[in-house]
Amino acid sequence: MPDTITPEKLKDLPPETRDWLANLRPDEMKTLQAVVEMPADDVREAFRLVRDLRTVGRFTRVVVITSVSIFVGTIMLYEQIVKVIGYFKGGPTQ
Image (cartoon, rainbow, N blue to C red; front, side, top):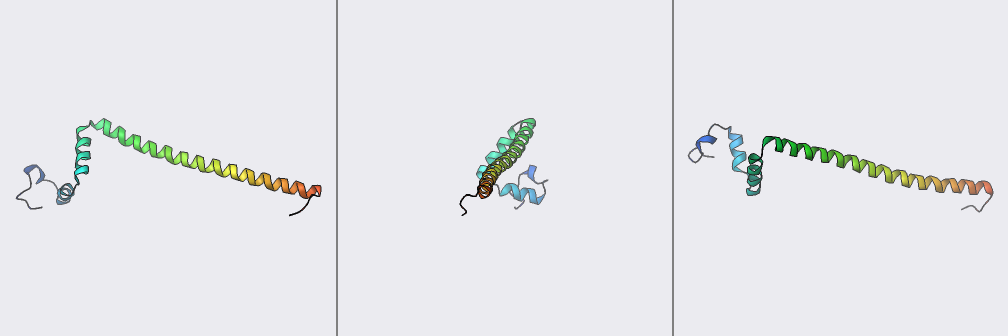
């Protein structure tokens, strides 16, 4: 970025930061402006909320997978127990 078009406020920034700001897409710029206008506590709380939702999502996924696995495992165990009981009673073998 040539220094001739750089505003005075941006001249003190490191070149990497200036390049990053220059390469922002319009939607990213709108998001950044909205975040800057929000109170700092609200921004921190929003990030905390996202982190907590991710944690709950991971926990829920583990609970669902575990529940389905226990259900399927219980059905398979029941079928095998019925087969064993059938063998002891002298029923037909497969």
